[in-house]
Length: 131
Image (cartoon, rainbow, N blue to C red; front, side, top):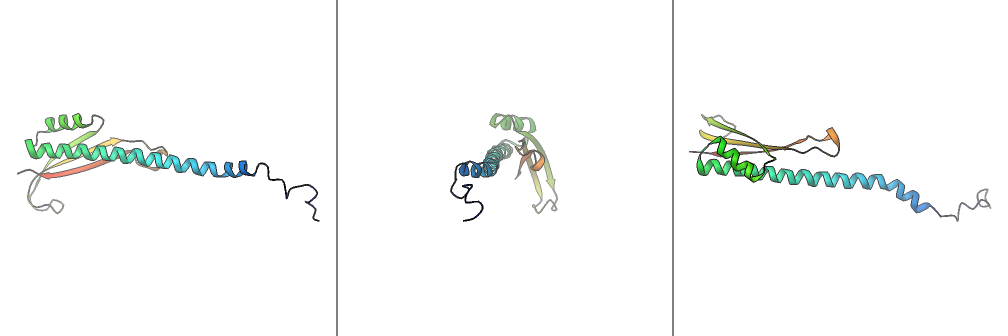
């Protein structure tokens, strides 16, 4: 018989599950928070992509009217900020052939649950040729 056999530590298992749960709980909470944060950001990115595509389609169908494009994009989702640029390329425009293009940059502020570890802005860019 050892020294600890008289104290009863070998057979006493009360509280073991509580201690194991206390050790695993912070890891589980971080995993759930990370999953929730990623889902929020992915859904916001999908909305921003849809708004940028709406602005690009408007430019192709109706011409590059910035105010009307912004109105159509705001009707899609009012929380998304939009920047619209009309770009004229003479051949050296990021690999695009010469022509007139509309570049729509849409973004939304989505703060992360983890603070400054992730960028707070989700953006999407759509470029279409108008000619």
